[in-house]
Length: 263
Image 1: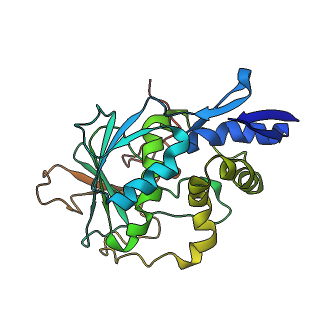
Image 2 (image 1 turned 180 degrees about the vertical axis):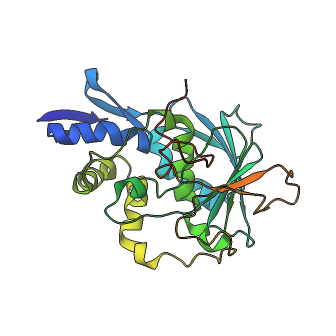
Image 3 (image 1 turned 45 degrees about the horizontal axis):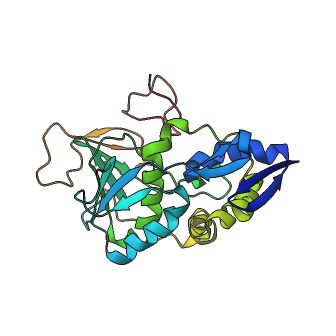
């Protein structure tokens, strides 16, 4: 058995769970200092500017991310931020959430299939690149998930290069670690990780997609197929982003693999 501490709380874990925990913690904005047997915040020196949230959502975002010690603000005048998120809600969106980074728009379709850890961990909400500002457009029917999705995007802004594959972690081990450890560290964030497990069947109906995008697996890049911005440049491309389905060299879609470090 192995002993780890979060502040003054002690956890005793078998080796299998320690190994799984080391992989999972970066996804949660945490890390292990092994020589001190401690779990510690991983975003202590990170600063994020978030615009477009109401005061209630901003408070909730601070609560759910407090274990990471990230610094959040609503205007760049207060701090010099590392990354900036601009949030808006648009009825015209054909997907639940759309990210725009450097004139490239990525349509994301959240998915939390029970038992599939790769989909559950961040609900298929993946940041394709970290280039500020990041424009986040969400369909109003899914507004209640704004704080949850921003948690994942903010953590990925700083930790995406440290993410490791989850294939060797069983879903039962994952659930045990969430219930026992993450719930102790930050119950508000832990509930986000469990939210889709209990309400998956009640997921709101998504807006209808244009016929050319309504595919079984929306993996193909579509140039100019969606223009959520009135001032969008003509050369802007729109694609549906799935980091786990684009692992081969033969796929020509412009996809970012969150597990592949840049050199």
